[in-house]
Amino acid sequence: MRKITEEGVTFRSHIDGSKHFLSPEKAIEIQMALGADIIMAFDECVPYPADYNYARQSTQRTTRWAKRCQEAHTRQDQGLFGIVQGGMYKDLRTQSVTDLVDLDFPGYAIGGLSVGEPKPLMYEILAHTAEQLPVNKPRYLMGVGTPDCLIEGVLYGIDMFDCVYPTRVARNGTVLTKKGRLVVRNAQYARDFAPIDPECSCYTCRNFSRAYIRHLFKAEELFALRLATIHNLHFLLDLMRKIRHAIIEDRFVEFRREFFAEYSM
Figure 1 (cartoon, rainbow, N blue to C red):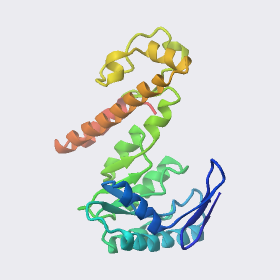
Figure 2 (spheres, rainbow, N blue to C red):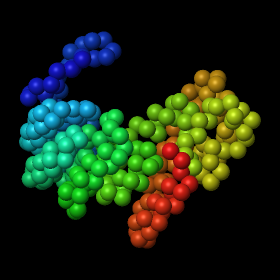
Figure 3 (cartoon, helix red, strand yellow):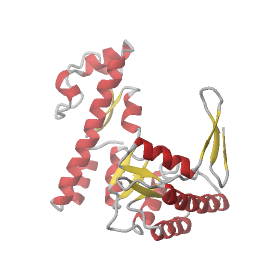
């Protein structure tokens, strides 16, 4: 489906098989046209597992692409972040950080994690990488969004996250609570007229019961997906709000301990 070269990536559409080419310059052109406040340098996300030589060559090419992205980026009202790669190899992560910091980006993303590796390994590489990034610039962990990973990411110094997780699991009837995931489409909720989370103030929990949302899922109503998504997004935004307050009040470690005492993964 795709071929990677020094110039960029050629890939075929999964819809009609048509061929497309994306280079660092083209990626920046598109992102400048979209007008996002924060945009990303063009990179390759090293897969897991990957042998050392492949990871090394890919990471070096990502650095060269980052330089080309800087040269192509002309908008002053956008922050272009460099993306740290290196697979699961600490020396490659260190080299990637060094090279990108030398380019002096306004912020740095950590890519290539949560790609199938065990969580203990992910946290090990995350801790190793994050501690080397500048403390005066935002650190962004790409593609990570489960509640437990958000809290652990903050522990290691991450400021920003993104992930499709809250919407992806919502489509399957899974909603997030402080006690863990709840599959609202399960039969046990057919006559449960409580909200998803009695302590939640989102639109879904203020207006609809578990039983009704389950009914919508069983009837294959798209409104079910929307209601579950609204709740999940609200839950994660509220979690991050509470984390910020805990940090300001210098009680994040206590907050983390209390969260995991109740949360079931």
